[in-house]
Length: 354
Ligand code: NAD
Ligand code: WQD
Image (cartoon, protein in one colour):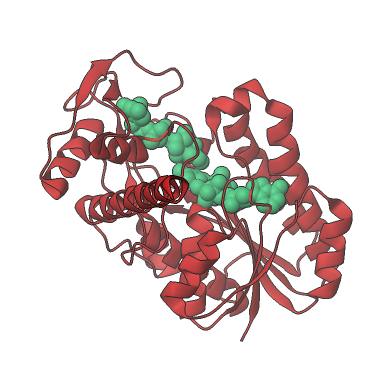
């Protein structure tokens, strides 16, 4: 079984990808510093697959630890690099944290991979590299536009660092996956998204409003040039996204890649407005969502949805789930974690009572 390093493997997308890698027979090693996840996610992975991935907790910004790790695990056949900071607003406030964590770490990993003979890397990129693309759906040839945030810049520059490194290291093969909007949770509700604090993203804010944790959702603008005036995005089920990573990894480990640096958009190919997503929640949950129209949010692009032809034809991957499928998984997950937290609070209050 090929051994695969998954950095950030206890995070939202990483944990779902670990499950799919194990399902395909890969031997998974996770490195995560738990800065945006918890070790409990391991239990969820094991509950789904029955297999315990090897887990090492350390900060990938610690270069000597990265070097020691790759010396110890010299038989790694590929790396899927999820570990990064991803809060757009925080990146504006603290750009150096993002350049260090999202680019410094990438350089350390590339330095280790270029010491090996053959090496394979899958990089978490984002449709944010396109900014407001001129035409929809967005193809991989769409021009990369000036980043709207330091976070977005780390994805653009990250791709360039990988491309430049691959150009002079023919033994290194890499694929950048440009995710659109990942949403949802594993259908077993053993793993899902665990946003810390007030969610910035639409989906967790909707499910937290639905469960009563938030009073109401603010819809950031309904005066955009779109069918219903709200912004349009391509919401892709996180399990579909995870399966795309396995397809991309297999492409590299089986030497099926056409060049040693390739890029793929990962979306459903369907655009959904904010109101479409709210309607999906109400269909799936049977509940009305409390929301109001609020001013536009700075930095929002009007529309972004993927042209999925390249991923379908070349990667041999296609998203299978609908928006309602993803919404149902997100809602089931929200209900589960709230129930678990309420039970925990109840037990602790009971125990203090005793
Ligand atoms: P996440 O925060 O849930 O997962 C990232 C994981 O990496 C976390 O478990 C965190 O603890 C870990 N990590 C961060 N810095 C680390 C470090 N220095 N050392 C070790 N571990 C570290 O995020 P996610 O939503 O799963 O995103 C994964 C990747 O996909 C990121 O690179 C992100 O930029 C990218 N991406 C995410 C989205 C999205 O909407 N979620 C969209 C496009 C791209
Ligand atoms: C989606 C739509 C909002 C919250 C972001 C990052 C991107 C990537 C994915 C990391 C927009 C609207 C949202 C709310 C709202 N992350 N909205 N009320 O902005 O497309 O992408 O997450 O790589 O880099 O930019 O996703 O979920 O924040 O917003 O009306 O409370 O929902 O205006 O139109 P976005 P999002």
